[in-house]
Image 1 (cartoon, one colour):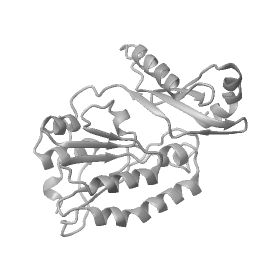
Image 2 (cartoon, helix red, strand yellow):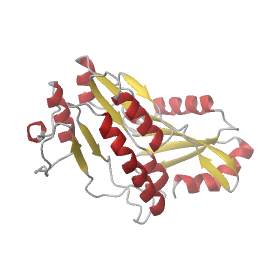
Image 3 (cartoon, one colour):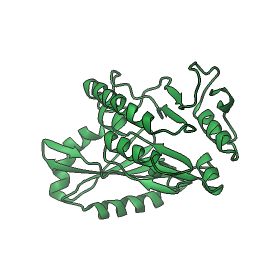
Image 4 (cartoon, one colour):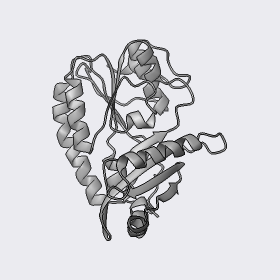
Length: 263
């Protein structure tokens, strides 16, 4: 069952008893839900921090512990934007670590700071929605920063992908697309914009879990002189390798840099 279905089923019980709603998903993720009026956010976060410590043991290695606060009344519960993820630290040095160690800015917007457990991050900015994320990114790109700004637009996944909400997903893409001209207009001549996805979540598929398909990777810079298609087996590590190459920091073990082909 999806998280929203679980909260719909057990939310009233949680409100009456004060029990926690604890459920898992395949990522592997363990989620802990509670009504904000019954268990205050600080208390829920504290519980999740303790569970995170308990599950760092190698025999568990649960990827993330997620605080899932919700509000509303039985039959009309809503998960709030006060979600908080407690992830395992990366198992090795990331490009973000290399950038930070070399004095570059690494500005994490949205869930990014949680996903990497703060590793390699110099500034973290929380967001409440896709459009809030775009507002924050537009603010950042207008600042005089030197390094990487990394934004996650979580509504595509949490509100529309997992819930298989096709009209909602389509509208979210339209809303994002309408914000792109503003973002492109704020880019400087030597800025590089990369738009991609961290996994599939097809709203037309059966079930509620992530789906497996190729994801898009779009590269754009005001200084590009022509368009085209990058050849070869592009992976997430190739994105990291390209970023490392751009800043002249230590490249990851895997991945091919496309920097010389971006013209």
